[in-house]
Length: 114
Length: 115
Image (cartoon, rainbow over all chains, first blue to last red; front, top):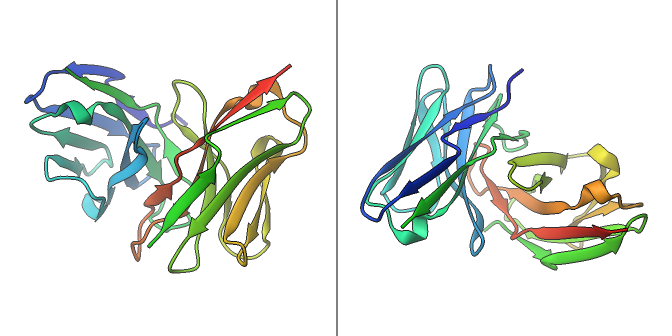
């Protein structure tokens, strides 16, 4: 089985632009969640989708949004980029939506905002 | 509120020595606890998890962790370190939501192994 695939692997943007990141979960997984990883703040939960519905959202501004499609693929969007948005964005998938689920992570998209 | 504290941002051991990575948690509900490992330029991989039942949990690559409710701890150990264990390790607790897979992660501990 193929793992979680995130595209693109690297991205460079300038302040004020918007960006869309893509995540393809493992086949059969219906839950997709997103995390932001930075050296200062560590790993922080962004949001989670299950069957095209946002289940939970972390403490991030409204500039961060996401969606999930009927094939479970997910995208996250960041509008009006700020320098502080530079981070590794990780996507994770799981078969179910319980709190004890094992998460399968992709290798991430490294976003640099100049 | 849920939180995780990992004591020591960097731990160095010699090959063959005991590995001990410390994790303390805070949770308003019975917690589910996890250890994930991240190798350079890769995503996270689950080492082990505690849900309910046996408090000593065995994971992959010879790692194990013990859930101690009285100490609110979930320390990760491995009897004998290998060079390939060098990586960043994250302790996590299930998030504050009533449902869902969201995790609250600690800041991470970088493990270095010297020969």
